[in-house]
Image (cartoon, rainbow over all chains, first blue to last red; front, side, top):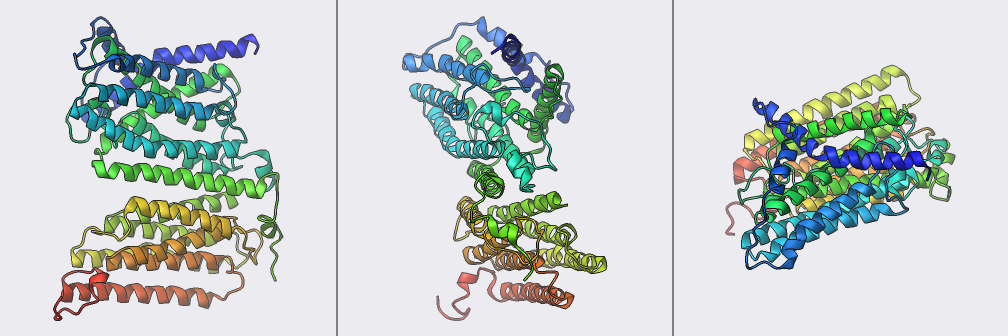
Length: 340
Length: 217
């Protein structure tokens, strides 16, 4: 790797580390604007983290080392995600073939650590949240993986760098060149379906509104907030910072999927930053205009995301059947169809 | 043109998943009417070799019936029987969506192998037609409310009409109009029947209609 791409990767990670809490600020400002309030400053999440870093954590006597390890490992998993996912066209620090499975694994690891730490407190309240988190994650994860599998098929690559590379040309079908040669025109549909599924997974993973409410400590449907109730001080700062990084990573995936590429890296970064603002604003709008779903309806939303991903994957496989290297018996009648 | 047609067909498939996943009756009706509107636009997009006035007539009549008249009739039926949502479907909504995905995969796998008599048709036309017809059938057998069953019938009819697009160059306009008239009569009669069933039995659940009202349960 020559010097410049490495520099881009480092700059991209630094941007994520600095700006991830600001994205939370954007969401909160949009929500405040919808409610007719002025809203907290954009850097509020940073202020909160700084305040919490100055406090010491309090540990209950019933908790063990798992509880203390939870926030640290959770933050570590989020940091690895940041290093893994490419953003604004630059390759990531840790790019390799098949890293999309590691990404899903890291998300699952972070979730598992949080769940175990919540169970370690022995509180029934937190156990309830942990159970819900595991339930919803088991539906959200297949949606994420199927969506990425569809994208991998369209882009002809199994690394995140390949998945999110290349600009979007919906009319030409955003597929691999062999698709374009065979006249397959639904690569764009695959892209949009996966993006919508990814957006639902993004809302669910980050405990945003149709699934969970990030602002409330009421017990009825809250999931993520209840699991971290017993953490305080530095630990809570780690958790909040990790959560904002996760928001940045998943939002960044949507942006990389849909944002156009200009060819110049600085312009790409500017476009991606604008895209992140749009994703943040879209989240804020979604949270303002929608009510939180009833707990029993949440799986239905996630199954819908799963269905969209599955549709995308079916279309991707179909396109590969028509335009792929093996023009077998499956596609032959289609091209040879003539009026009787 | 074909990219637009493929896009419309993808939306067409999504309306099926929408029909499978929604519990509110009005939302189901919206799904089927959006499906009808998309179907009405298809003859203009797929590049059928026919005089333009015929395509516009077909699209217009189909839009008027499936996009406007049927939803209005069924919405009136829903209002008159005062039913808001399907209470207990025989197959739950999440499971319905998953079964829908399985049907989708099956129709894509088989539909792509069927050769069309007309060249230049979008590749997704036959699979999405098959998927829509299957969805309609599934809705008819898996829901209890007579209104949703009528919607399943409509979805099935949409699927068959989409399939007919592939043959549109060869079949006379009279056949198209005839099927539309049939569907119109069916929905009209179903709307009236649902109203009467509700007035006689105080519900529209078809699996409870096996026993007569005055017979002991």
